Length: 99
Image (tube, rainbow, N blue to C red):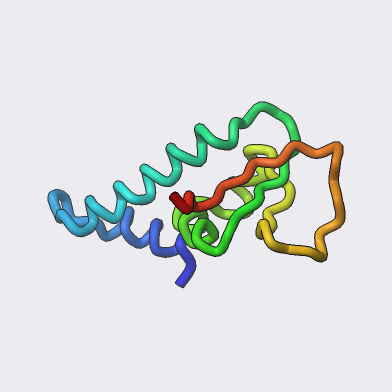
């Protein structure tokens, strides 16, 4: 089950006042608001770099299409050594803090 299907199901079947559904919807909202601040839809093209911990966080609220609407044309992991240098591109790095 993809995250977008889960989100759609929660919206369709959410019983008013159900605390579990409300909490799940809050997680989607919180992630979406955080990423919206982190990746402005300013018309510029960007690369989004993630680590192993932030990939599932991002995927809870964003699809590739939604990221593309915000100017993200490539999503990659920080440790990918096969990636070609893209010095002319802006990058947004979303990683878990270690301290």
